[in-house]
Image: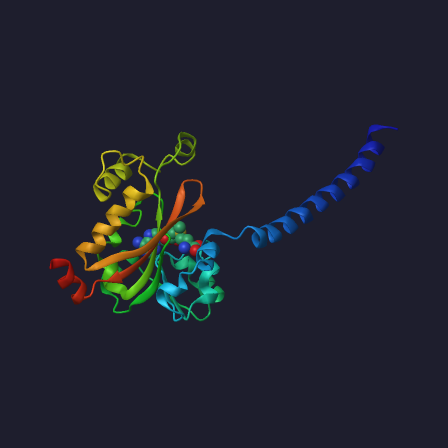
Length: 245
Ligand SMILES: C[S@@+](CC[C@H](N)C(=O)[O-])C[C@H]1O[C@@H](n2cnc3c(N)ncnc32)[C@H](O)[C@@H]1O
């Protein structure tokens, strides 16, 4: 058998095998999503709705096209507002979430200006510095003005990043990023924090703004990224008086 005939025999087989492999991949992907739910789907399976009641007014502070996290919780909320700075996502967001209010805006400015209030706020922020901002730090303290008296706030946190990951994402934990983390988390080792050290910062921010964290938990997302989910409540006058007594 010459080389050409052999090739003709092998290649159709090869493409058939590749097609089968592709089908397998699609099948596995579909079923993996069912078997291993994504982190935000796991969050909404927890009894968090008991924290704020069934009427959920949600805000996605950094929208992109909504495929990262919004699509995992959009079906359980009563209303949804999505903020995103980049206009290129507007049409896709409108298509994917026809009942949502989409705002093309700078979220750091919007949080200071809007008169709306929400009880489920998802902050799926960038993972380093961008423009003059860093992670979600500059949303504080203004984020408290858009929170209902009892609300869930979810932010992306990065306790630490392995050497391998830092090589892959060199902008994570660059000099400016570490300086900003040092000041936000009030730590002299901002590259290596524990979740409980980080929570102290959010607890302090809450306290300074008349709120408190009632429940919280951390859910790993991927690589070095985690969701910090906090149930935050406004401190009533009665509680303030009680604390002073
Ligand atoms: C991590 S992605 C968000 C992913 C999204 N939550 C999802 O479910 O697919 C971060 C997004 O924040 C947007 N962004 C960056 N700076 C912003 C700003 N100042 N105001 C609003 N959006 C901003 C980026 O354009 C990007 O689309």
